[in-house]
Each structure stands twice: as structure tokens, then as C-alpha cells.
Amino acid sequence: MRTNNLFRKTLIAAGLAAAFATVPFAQVAAQDAARQSQDAAQRQQDAASMRQTQDAATMQDKSSNETVPGKTNDAWITTKIKSELATTKGIKSTDISVQTKDGTVTLTGTTASAGEKAKVEHVAKQVKGVKTVDASGLMVSDAAH
Image (cartoon, rainbow, N blue to C red; front, top):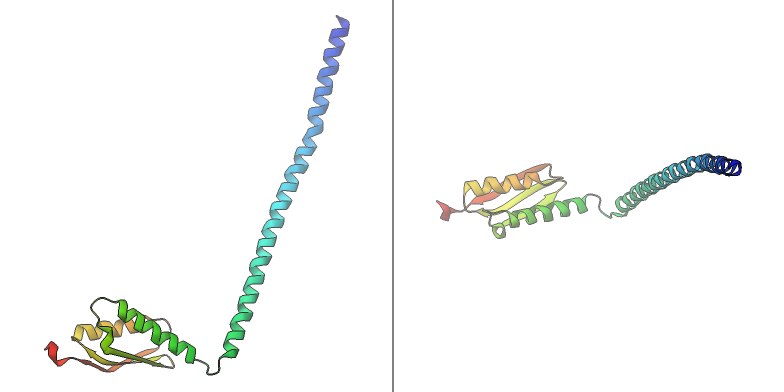
């Protein structure tokens, strides 16, 4: 009986010792996980910073490679306005010509009504990069009267 009791106490003591011994391992594992998470976040931040630096360098390269500065922007504005006019209901874009110089858009051609002319001007003004719109060459068709 006494041997049984001693064996039981020894077994309980060994179990408690094993349980308390694993607590520091759990803390170390939690700290390692936190450190790995911080390292991963830092790597992502470094990668994002590197991409921004590369993007800025690419933009500088592109702007310095333009043979005529601003011409690319004007061509983009012209193309964007033509695209917007072609996809806007109530506008017959085939009768309208668009030219852009230094952000100033010149519209020429004919529209079916004064309302269509106003709509064309509005669409052109909404395009990013447009400074002013000159619609003096845009005429309302006599057939609309």
C-alpha cells in the first residue's frame, strides 16, 4: 500500500514537472511566431517601398525619353475624348473632329442640335488633363431646325 501511494505521488510529481517544463516552450513558440509575422510584414513593406522607387524611376525615364514633351498627353486627351464621344448616347461622334494642343481641346464639325453640342462640350471638359474646350468650330446642323 505504501509503495502504491509513493508510486502515485512520484507519478503526479513527474507529470507536474513535465507540464511546467512545456510552458516556456509554448512562450518561445509564441514569440517565434510573432517575430516571424513581424519579419514577414517588414519584408512586404520593403518590397512595396522598392516597387515605389522603381515606379518613380520608370516615370522619370519615360518623361525624359519624350522627344516632344506634352505631345503624348495631348494625343491621349484627343483619343480619350473621341472614345468618350463614341460611347455616349445621343452624340453622333463621326461628325465631330477633336484636336488638342497643350491641354486646349478644339472641337469642329456638326451636331444635330444645340443640346447635343452642349453635351459634346461637357464630355470633353470631363476628360482628365483638359484645360479648356473651344467649341466655336462646332456648328449645329441646319437640318435640325
